Each structure stands twice: as structure tokens, then as C-alpha cells.
Image (cartoon, rainbow, N blue to C red; front, side, top):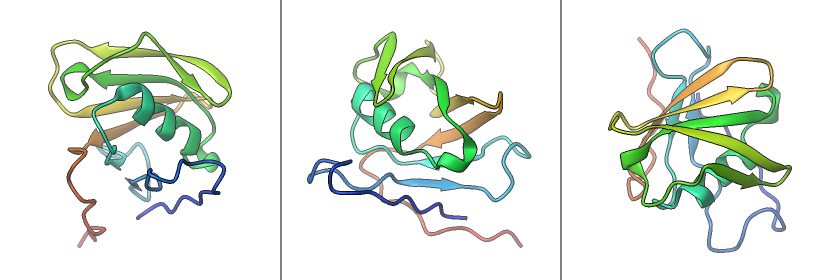
Length: 126
């Protein structure tokens, strides 16, 4: 399933694309809950965009854990629209993964794709 995110002109600077995110229909039933294509290797910018525009039906993201080698710089806290949230990392893991801890205690695991890769069409099981 591709999750469509609506953006309003005031939400996103003109040079940014809408959030590039695909989620599986049933979260938590496999090793990955979806894929995310950030637009750069700047963790602070990309993770804030992901947190601020993550589909609201899943609740709020309150912590982000990531693979450190995927990013050029890594802060200890992330500035998002609602304030600061904690971040953590797997220092030596090059698994291209990102985990979101949600307000309902659910963990959402995303595979991080190369920022310069185009999102793939939705794959159908079958």
C-alpha cells in the first residue's frame, strides 16, 4: 500500500517533495513495515520531515532510532513542529533501517532507501 500524504504550501518549502513513504497494509507482521526515501543525507531535516508528516492515524512519533552510517550528521535530539524528540542510533549497523516509537507504544520499522533513488511502484503480494 502506498500512503498518500497531503501537504499544504505552508508545511513544506517549495524545493522539497512530499514525503516519500510506502507502508505495508498490516503493520507489525513482518521484518519491515514499509520503506522511506529521504531527500538527502541530512538526518535532522529528513527525520523532522518524516515525523512531522507521518500519517496521523498511527499516532505521534516520540522517538527515532536509525542506522548511523546512512547519514552525514546525527544529532542527539530532533527538532520537530511540536518540539524536541529523542533520537538514538545503531552506531555500527549499516542495515539501512529506521525505527519509529509511536505514542501508542507501537514500533514501526522502515527500510531507508538511498536518497537519490526513486520510489518503486507498490509491490503486490501474490
